[in-house]
Length: 251
Image (cartoon, rainbow, N blue to C red; front, side, top):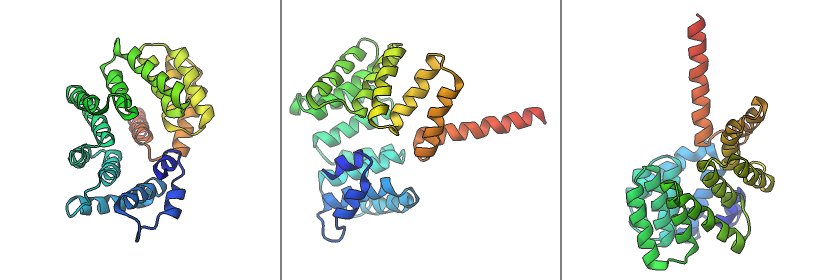
């Protein structure tokens, strides 16, 4: 339940209701992730706590492994994330392993991990999500398979920004930009500040030849609402490089 609140950008609920001194290890790990998401200024300290636990006596708990691995993933430390995830056989940890392997562009290893998940529980929502991620990475004809997996989840559980953006990413790779934009605008209507929807709207607006102010509106919203998002950090860094080169070229 608390993880769902964090996913909805409501980490304060977990922070206020979970007592770090008396809660079991799994809930302590969830609370730590909530603090990581809620307090960007404290993230380096939280990473140090995870490091100390990782190098010491980490509780043998699937949720602890998963939450700590997700923090490592957000810090772009994929190697440590994988080391933690490999200590668990849970479907969620295996799904996170698939994400890590896809980040490393090891689609071959991700496919093997998905196969293991299918052998455990092919119909699990987590397994189906991992399969959709894999199909998206494989591209081409597999994009349609990924799209329909997401559609089945929407039909079963209802549309969410996450699923709508996932479908849109499949359409973008098929160059169906107008259809993708409709899904992204739907996602944005459900959550006006959803980072992944805004990022993909930046991409789609470029392909559709939208006016520069449209693209800039999405970019400014990302800068204001998600300054610590990897996309925003990378974009801002490139802006600074461009500005520096522009000054040098006119000097």
